[in-house]
Amino acid sequence: MEAATGTTTVTVTVPDEERGGAAGTGPVRLFCTDHGGDGPPLLLLHGLAGHCGEWEALAARFAATHRVIAFDARGSGQSTRRPGDVTRAAHVRDVRGVAHRFGLAGEDTVLVGQSMGGLTALLTAAAHPEVCRALVLIEAGPGGPAPELPEQIGSWLDSWPVPFPDVEAAEAFFGGGPAGRAWAAGLAPGPGGLHPRVDRDVMVASVRENAHRDYWDAWDRVRCPALVLRGESGTMKPDEADRMRARHPATRIAVIPGAGHDAHLDNTPAVYEEMAHYLRDPRQ
Image (cartoon, rainbow, N blue to C red; front, side, top):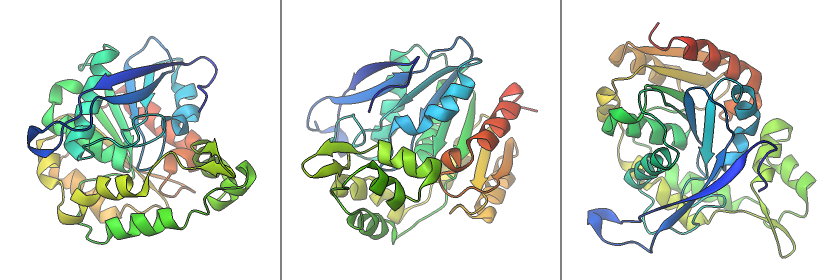
């Protein structure tokens, strides 16, 4: 994946640890894109099997007013493909490592995450309130458990007709439009066509915790304000968002029209408008 014009790429190295503190497979490399900007920082976290390039359209809109950083999560994109630890705790450590590398001041930084990236943002804010001043959660919340999720993710990845013969075929498979183009952009050239930059077993392992538990306890520890964005036809249930606001009144909820789970791709202008309005005064 090439960086968009006006961005620079940086690789951040963080330790890899498995449960119980045992050593993993070695240091994890995180591929980051720095979109520049001199304003308050936005740190963007993509969803499962995604890549940081899917934020480019939104980052371009914010670069004039914010410092915008995104990175490929461990196991995805151009970051380490098979890390030893894919727990949510490992993803939280990665957020802290990237924030430290780029000197993002916690009192100014806003964590923005979609889907599993949103859950990582939520857990980071709960465990390390010094890391951010506000959250933007796109189709993401603390609900669960979801016993069927690992099987669903495995079946979804098994359905990909790998290798994709060309970009056009990949875009069509992923539904076309901006979302289809973004998903296709996450593929890599290889024998016979385009291949995923993720491994099935790593992605399934990444959601295994979600099969057995929810994260309402973490949500109750979040002290910063939050904006929750649901796609009009997304997978996040309205009652989950309402419950989030009931337990944490400093939460705003907005619905993105004409958007599904990939709301930041399906309707980037609407997501930008909601975020820009919110970021002018998150505590309003």
